[in-house]
Structures are given as structure tokens and as C-alpha cells.
Length: 108
Image 1: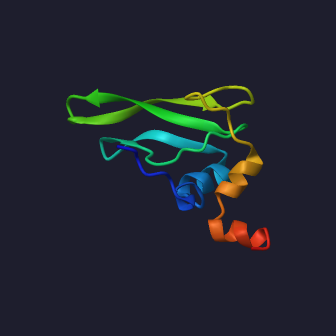
Image 2: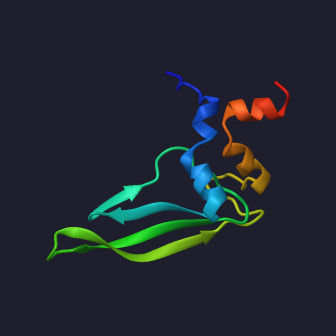
């Protein structure tokens, strides 16, 4: 069975692209209300940005997870993550726009 391909909207105008463009960093793992949460969907890997993964510990007394130390990965040119070279800031700017906005810019 072949999995269905992605649509333009799976990658364009997604919250992760907008957050990364605005803040320069993207949180991939965090603890919220004692639960470990993960960013779901397309994750832009962009040169000059930071990916943040929250480590955590189990609090036996409270019976929930608590944040421990954040791990920050600085994405730099030439560094491969999951066999992928980073996108450029220009690529990220395009990702933050809707497919319709991109078509309009191209005169379509």
C-alpha cells in the first residue's frame, strides 16, 4: 500500500513555520500539566534557528512528569538532521505563507 502524498497546505502556512520565523526557535518536546507533549506534523529544519527538546523527570510524589533541562540544537549550514540538510531563511519565509499567497506573488 502506498501512502498518500502531502498537499501544499501540509507544509505551507503551518503554525510551526510561523513560530520558527517569528521566534527563531521551535519547541519540539515539552511538559504541560504533567504530561509530555510533542510537536506533531511537518517540522521545519532551518539554518540559523534553534530546536528545543525538553527533558523531564517523573515526580513520584506528584505522580506526574516535571521539566528538567532543555536541550537546544543549533541548526547550522551543512548539519544534517534525519538525513536532511537545513532549509534557508528564504525557504522558511515561503513556508510561512499560504499556497494562495505564493501564487499571488508569482502573478498566478
